[in-house]
Length: 241
Image 1 (spheres, rainbow, N blue to C red):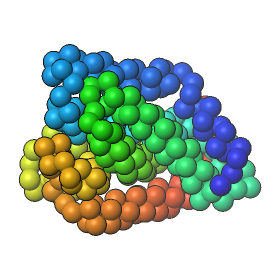
Image 2: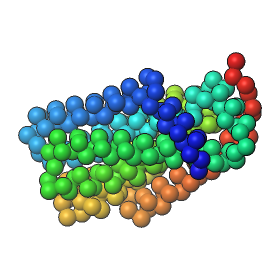
Image 3: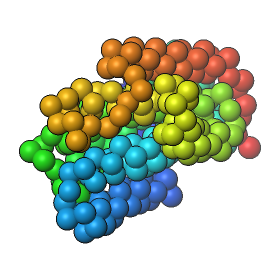
Image 4: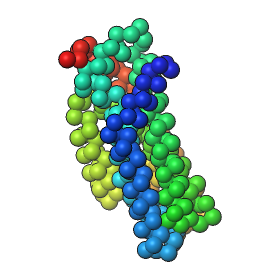
């Protein structure tokens, strides 16, 4: 890890329109949580559905997309990455430093907004908070690594990421049985399902077991990280115009 690279990455994430969007997404989640509370009178079943489908199925992937691509994508697009790559630092160190900042940002924003949303919508003895914070943390790591890799390998990372987040994870991964087993959200929800094992009415339905979900998340995160690092090593040095 390199502290200077991490500091520059954090500064890039917290500046400009991307930072505004990163604040609007949690605000939207809190608004939906308030509407859920109003419409269900704090029914924990409605809260669980909101957390599993909206928070984890839509908002979290979009948040991780903004963070994962924003950690390195803009620098690649405008060519300014060349100045960082020219430094006497291994490209592996640059990639891992940026990815660490991105994952940390996703974890902080994702878990805090989820806790607040569940408390607003209505919890039951902190069962839902504990369950979904665990799942959100796991999903945030996987999503951010995937989108970070996309930003390195594709100039259309945001478009590809949107298709993946909204179509694959949000629609197909939520309703098509064969695809659900290949969904980051379903892998992460297996943790919430285990935590809520004693509360069957609140349990989200995951297509995979906890062991399978954790293994698939670990494999996916490692594979996409390795692919991203390898691609960064071969990235041509193009000076920004």
